[in-house]
Image 1 (tube, rainbow, N blue to C red):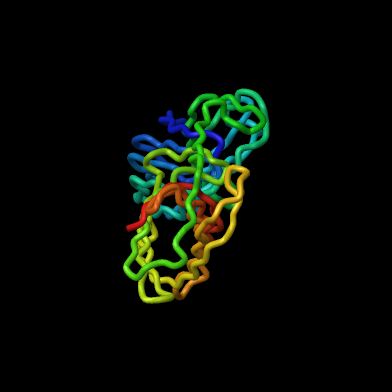
Image 2: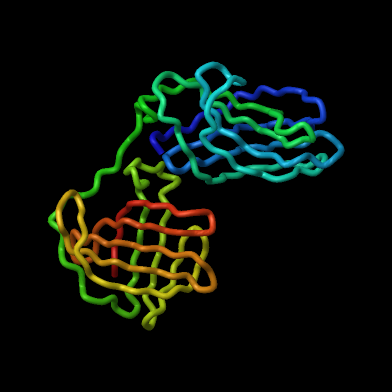
Length: 272
């Protein structure tokens, strides 16, 4: 996203007609690096009414005045229903985000909203203070720099048993991801066209197409290895472009399509 920050929440609760009574124990916070938003809960959100709640979701708001007031929805995540006396506990949930292209100081608030017969109602809010925006960019956004060349021409083919280790560093906008969001993946080359991918989604079998082609990087034409991966028994796909700065290492760009949508990231890799 356009900034990275993690803020501890102060809780404000409202009693709403037809709404359940919720209690937040612990810290509810978030991290933003566009287009990612991660909601983190260290504690619990409990339904203190006897009956099952309506659908519950988290909503990150940016408002020019203290919440509740008109503003912009930056991110949402649907938690689902909570049975009476039950709770959601200790989670880290990733979703997409969209910071408005506005300028000024904005209040950022995580609202816990419940769907009732009268529509969505706020039942809790975590107010986190203000952030300064300049046309939708946070002033303290840290960028990741694509390593400078020269870049080497890749091998013409992958080798059986070759292992590629990828560490994501940034989003498509080159906004640096927090350390705890820098996912790692291990790709193991099998008998053509097989490849095995181990990443935060688990270990999955896939097929691969590998080719060497000319790409533009840092406004220069370079030779790169393009690895197209199709996952078995799903519509998931990834195109990983490898730029070799040394025989067995370099940086990469990954365009991945999963059930949750399409995401482009940058990072570093090694091969062995």
